[in-house]
Every structure is written in structure tokens, then in C-alpha cells.
Length: 129
Image (cartoon, rainbow, N blue to C red; front, side, top):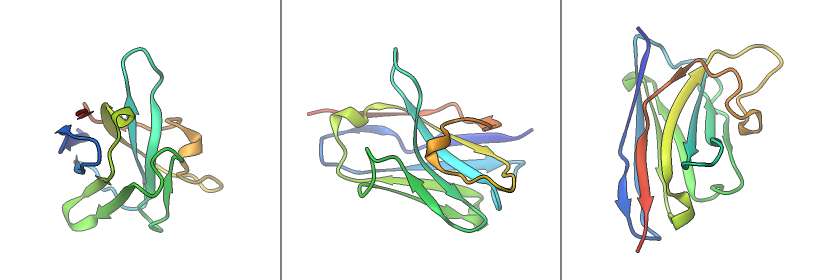
């Protein structure tokens, strides 16, 4: 069955960096939308970054633009999220998810989590002094 596995979370100080990985099993990430989402208890899940793995187009929420970078490695069937200049407000459980694309739509984060079919179990990121 399709599985997504996140890793790379941890505890860092403000200004620190982390690299999250999302490895897909029994699923080819190519020509898909793959996104990173985060959620804090009591708050709604929010889209952080996404990538169109067919064309390589990347999308970012304004809150992480210029700090986070999403990328793909097709040989490893993996999508990464490099997070720099981390802030306490970045603290959350981070999830990766993926969906098929349809013509006429993009992988933009403005679409939120709509249509995402497969989800990982999450990796915790904590940013504190």
C-alpha cells in the first residue's frame, strides 16, 4: 500500500535549521503534487510548501517564503523541506502529503489540503530558546 514517511524533525533554537524528508513507498512521486503541511493542537492545518514534481514548480506560504525550500529527488522517491531561520511560530507537527494532478489546476498552497490522497504520520518540529 502507499505509504509516506516523514523524518528529520527535532528541537532547535530560533534561527536554526532542519531538513525534513518525505519518502514514498509503493508510489511514484513523479508528475504529482507533493506538499508539506503543519498543524498545532487547537488550530487548523495549514499548507507550508508544495511542489509540482512534473514541472518542478514550487509554491510557498508567505509565512515561510525565503526561509524554507522544497525539493525532490526522483531517484530516492523523496521530497525534502529545508527549513532555515526557524522561528518559534514554526513549531508544529509537519506532515507530507501527495495527490494526483488534474489539468487546469496547480499544486499551489492556496488550495490548502484539498484533494490530497495520501498522508504521512508527521514529524514534530519544536523551535525554542
